[in-house]
Length: 227
Image (cartoon, rainbow, N blue to C red; front, side, top):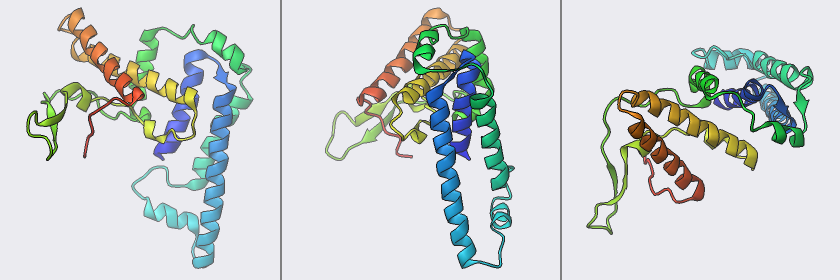
C-alpha cells in the first residue's frame, strides 16, 4: 500500500504542479501497475492450488481487516482509473522535450507548500518536525577513543526523505524530482518551526538541511540511524 500510495502521489503531483504529464511518468506508472498485476495473478494462482476450497480475496480481507484498502480488485481498479484519468484522457500529455521546456515555469511556492502539507503522509513524512529538542547523537566505535565517533546533529536526525527507498528502477529524473520535493518539504517545516526567530535563523536552518541532503546524494553522509 505504501508503494501504491507513492506511485499515485507521483502521478497526481506531476499533473497538479505543472498542469502537464511527463510521458515517462505515465510509462513508469503503467509498467509498475502491470508488474503488480502479474505478481498478484501468480500468487493468487498458487494460493488456489494449495487452498482450492478458499477464496483468496476473502482470505486477504480477513488478514488485513485493519486496513481500509484490503480489496485487491478495488485497488487495481483505482490504479487503472488514475492511469486513464491522467495519462489517456488529458490533452496535456507531452513529450520529454516539451516538458523540459515548460518545467521552469512551475507554480508558485505558496501553492506548492500547501499541497505538500496536505499530502505529507502520502509522501512519506507522517509528522512535522518534532518540537522536542534533540541532542547530538554519536555513533560509538570501539576503535575510536576520542572523539567519541561519528556524531549526527539534531537537524540530521529529523531529516525526512519520504518514500525514497521505493525508487529502485534507475529512474534518475524520478529520483531528482523526489529529492527536490523532500528539500522543499523540509524547508517549509523549518520555516514554520523558526517563523518567530527571524529570517537569518530560518535561512541558516534551510541551508543546513540542503547541505545534509547534498551529502546524502554525493555519498558523503556519515550519519546512520541504527534504529
